[in-house]
Image (cartoon, rainbow, N blue to C red; front, side, top):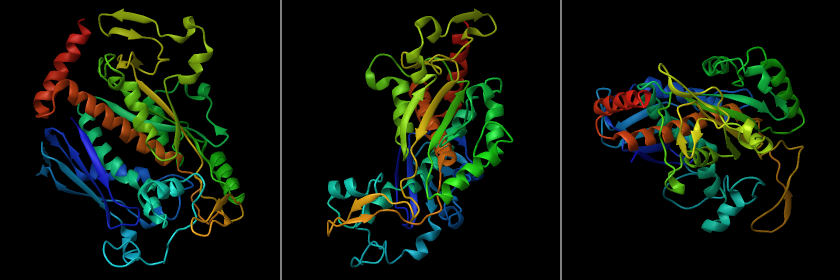
Length: 390
């Protein structure tokens, strides 16, 4: 089974990931991975850390002369800021009070993590709980995208709202998913419509002046996915559940829906389901996609559509105060701190692409084999033809 583990702290020496179960004979270029890492760092409203770090991947194992070997692939992204934290984040030596954190921030993992693992210096929690961890998720996702793109599966994302500022559904209904994605790639806020950036940026600037942070909603999709990935046979094999869990695991994501999601609850059955049609050229197909490409926990051949809600970043400007309590003195304090990171919704959308890519790559390899990519591709092509002739 395809799986990965990642490790590393936000201000540690590096972030790493080991990918196991990735097939042999896949052509890999580090430039492709670095492109995805750069996409994660973009977006209007990001903080100063993005100016410090220019993420570049190093492949330490599992690839030789640009071809995967079928053995574990080790990825590493060095933290440039580590040079400023070598004494604070040292592996050995005595603890120091410098940069110690005793004041938990509301909305972060600080307090709960400290209680769970027995720490009073909450830096031990936040260094790993930080969204900096998603760097290697994106690197792993890039490997998975390379795999999927080789069999025609395309994954993309775009932002639908920042705070109360929204893109109406009617504005993008006539725009193809590819064009939405291309527009997003040329937008500082990953918006699916060109020409909207300035009004969104003004809204973000106003939030910054007010000392606020902003959440939002983004959509991630996958096109040309084969019918029959996932299964209805057990609760934990249903693919919609796996996708929701993968996206929900991204820091600050508090809601995930597939297709029309919650809106389907307001509709009668006759308007909620996607009618089935058939043609010799296309086989079975639907003219609508309200269920987001998944029925009974399985892909049905239509685009997979997932939408996610991200809460506002909980660390606010100094003149906005949230109440908290010092873990040592138990005295109350104002938890607000200075920072310039107002929103990270565009970056979260890129991370969600990577998580969707990983889940789909794992399902592909589970269904068609995971040893030799040349043979796997042949099986996939044969299966696609069988589906068309069903």
